[in-house]
Image 1 (cartoon, one colour):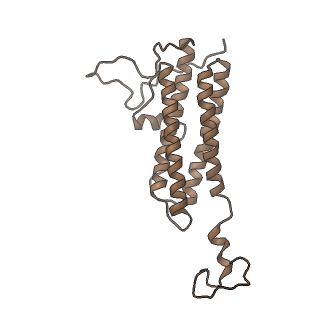
Image 2 (tube, rainbow, N blue to C red):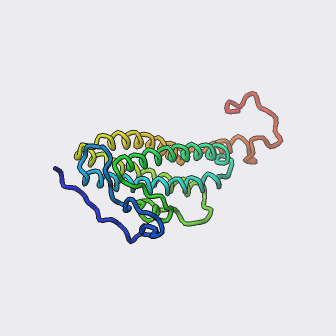
Image 3 (cartoon, rainbow, N blue to C red):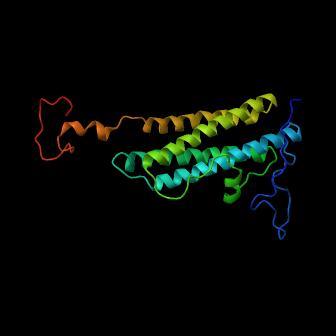
Length: 218
């Protein structure tokens, strides 16, 4: 069997220690029996790595939410508002797929937002309103990291013959590539607002002038 990346339980993280006033059935970052015919150490490694994606996707979801609420500007208010709404919906779907795979492997998906941020390999941007370009660039950088981390686990899952995890992550990576492509396209240098400026000396294409039948770009 390939060398297993068995990480120690990170019980020193915030909200990781179980509540002593409740009946504990399973310790965090462990796996129980699940009916999946993979060795326990394989299921634990795959579950822990998947949980990192679960946490990263939650961070991405929170940041997309913030940017969705703060969209503004001629090109952003409607088009980007709807685009980011689609990103939010797709990210929620991916969180569900990853978390369910963690559970099927016998693990426990991390659910506390503070612990999620600690475990996540991407981090939320600092609080505050930034330019739409800066915020979208942060989202794109997150997407690139998520894709790479998932590809790394897909390779590892192939080595360990965990075909279920391979199938889940391959579908998600394809979707995340689409999301990143949308962001990259929005951040491209061309702009409709800037591109129309030359049609009128005032910079306003509807500022008190008559329609010109000879104007090809009108």
